[in-house]
Length: 131
Image (tube, helix red, strand yellow):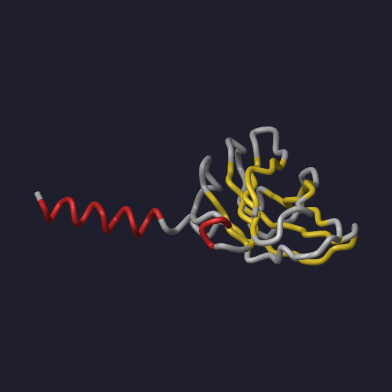
């Protein structure tokens, strides 16, 4: 019984750590997926004073699409300044990002270290928490 508990704990650590939020990383921007359908490519655009400052993206390497509750973390800089910072998500059903669409922009100016967001079922970006 003790071995089964140990194996279960190790599996929980291995699989539980694969989807860390930006808060757990202590930096960057994370996106939690709601029920969003067939998305294989996702990225973020970070704007400072309405000008593009940073872009990052990734795609689903395995078969299938991003699933509800899955979290993607981007190292994307959250800068410590008084300049207006906004973020939007770029998403596509194609792994190469073709035919991509963007979400609404959310203001993250008050964040100085990290931002947790959620892509909801209406494909709108929501601010969850930040520091």
